Image 1 (cartoon, rainbow, N blue to C red):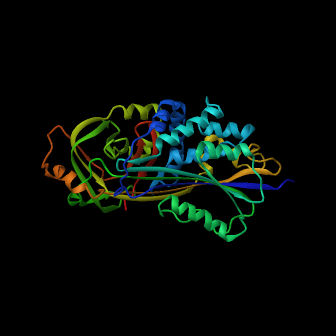
Image 2 (cartoon, rainbow, N blue to C red):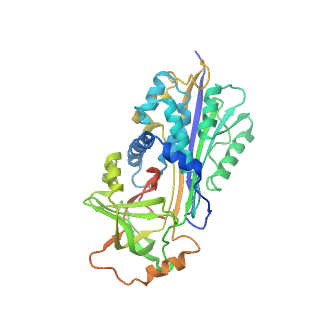
Image 3 (spheres, helix red, strand yellow):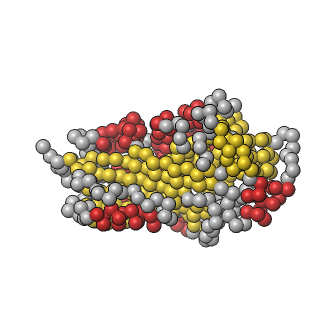
Length: 412
């Protein structure tokens, strides 16, 4: 019997405190070319993948906050996909919704998307870091390692996994790339049958285009799904905003920076629908219809400051989505990663997120004093009071890529 050796994939994503960081600079020729050349099939596939995964994960514990980054998860799995073969590759392609993209097109599109999404300037920073950490006594196919480097900019390093310092080396890299928000992603004692860690880190930080006035924040009730009522700091904004109302929800778009390229979309489901009912309706065609229907309206928004952390193992959800074969110790096929035997399989896919939302930044007072000065809105204006569980997404409005999405049932 061949020994089975495991491939551990740790996907980690951080959205840090949305405040106080500004870098200026042009988009650049390289990004403009990437926008022009981006294969829209990848964005569509990522939407399918992200919505389906979120629909699988939310019911696991609907009484708690669920926050994921579809982009981070799909990117880590995209690097892993390079090593899959046979039916395992087909299973991963099904889960990733890659029904009509060959490997070359998929890799080129991911490379373009990385170029486009990496952003520093205009009060917004969005950065990615990818890495392969290899057990030093094992060899891996050059094509697999080169694809991670060439298309995903992955750092690659061989380590003695039996040395406790190996875990610390990986964790230090994680801490650096996530601005200190996540310190431990790898256990001190690495399993003897683990041969590689594939890690993606996504760090986002941005200032609101129109900050909330901190002086207007008030303590207000927030109604939790278990019947409890918490008192939370409720931020208040009044004025013109991009707004959408449907029978099932109210929604508002809150952009970042002067360019307004990245935005948070806050969806408040009707009380009889709740987050579960709204999440069940998520699918790309419906989502794109909503995104195109927002319009500028006068109104008042009350939104709680919130902080959320999430950590979960994704094996069950990904198995339900069709890629269970990759986790099968007997049948998984990663022949394009390294020669077999021995059998290589996926041990785990772990996802961690952190997000903090507040009034934002040192320029907020001047920018928001006009909003505070508005005493009342016209009678036909909207009034959106986010005082019960809600759904949000952070989106790149250039490509339509959803960087983060989540449901918040406990803002504190």
